[in-house]
Length: 184
Length: 328
Image (cartoon, rainbow over all chains, first blue to last red; front, side, top):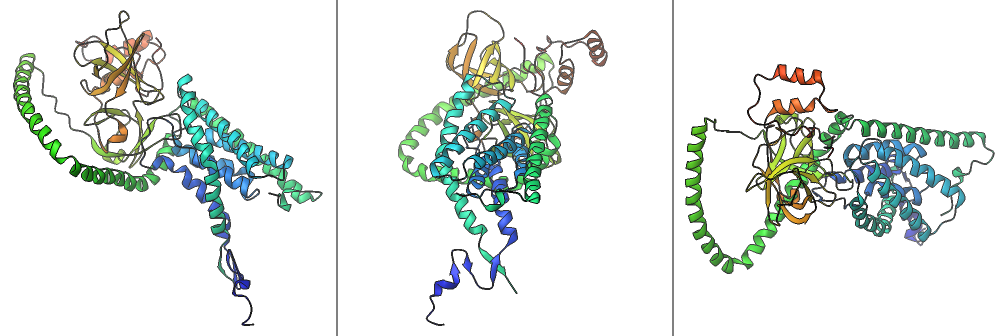
């Protein structure tokens, strides 16, 4: 037995013997990470124009694309509510957009079950663009052409940042699946 | 990535029902969201309680960050100071000589001012700020420009109070929570402040623009008298903002006014003052006839006022909630 490879009993997520995934981590990490991303307005940044990417929405997209079926289809309501309470948008704007996004992604997945990195990025790019546009329309601000020009830097930043967010979500996913619970 | 087996319901009735229920719940969520959105677009002040509760919960975290922001900027300033010590010293000596002269002039002016005020019989207007607080964060994702303030109802802050920094006006309080409040910054597109040129009485409205500058709209039409570099201060019209607080400096001229840069950049201010509403009676009066003055409304207001105001009435198009825009 001593000759056995020491890695045989372990893998990326910890010991395979006497340990199991924790349900709190498995289901809590995605929700918690999206809610934390909604708290971006509490960062000490007083922005003169909309510049920060919609991180909560991007985390939602990344989780949904990386782990389909992990977030329930109705998750748009509670997550959108949390985002609306702090983001400065009128209440309901994110609830509506998150819910529609989750439905759209589900239908998209029925059509394209096998996807790659580029396809995910293109889908995310389209959805982020739509999200920013509709958020601006719903924001209640008096819109002029300048507003939409100002969306461009925010949008570009969001699109470039999306693969990084996916990387962060992948790390969080590994954390989520750590075997920390002891089985007696 | 391949879909997990659970996504494909197949002929399993229970799985089919689960998928159907998921769609139903998601659609219901979207419908509720749409309803809430319509309600909050029609009545922006709805759900203020929910929002302020959320900001109360989260500000304690934000406050630590705000303190950190100030601390780090001080730290780097201190280091930078060592590198420019010599040239700065000479420059400051020169400046101090000029400043001494200016100070003497200012004392004389102050004296004269007091005398003139005594002649006019004006009481000295000693206004203490309601609260001193930090700007914690701002809605940096949304197209609206709100900031969160680390003082609330417990500190005596009320809706409509102006928020100023030593450099000038920052905005006004829009929603008040227990320990935090939400500030409508001057650069929000719904924010309108009556201003006048500091040197004379050219009056204008300062409206927020999306890119963080202000748009000055002159009230009197005609040849545009503005020049680049003109400083605008609050005029006191509307009764909300104390007159004479610096607001913006003209950077670009256009047909009916100018584009101006904000003097008190909220990003550079750490501590702000919440001041009382300048003339609450006037604000209350203006709040009423949102849809234009009616006969009955005019009578009501006239009955409430003790005597007709000496100064000409302020333009009636400034709504204190920031929800209505002047139709010009």
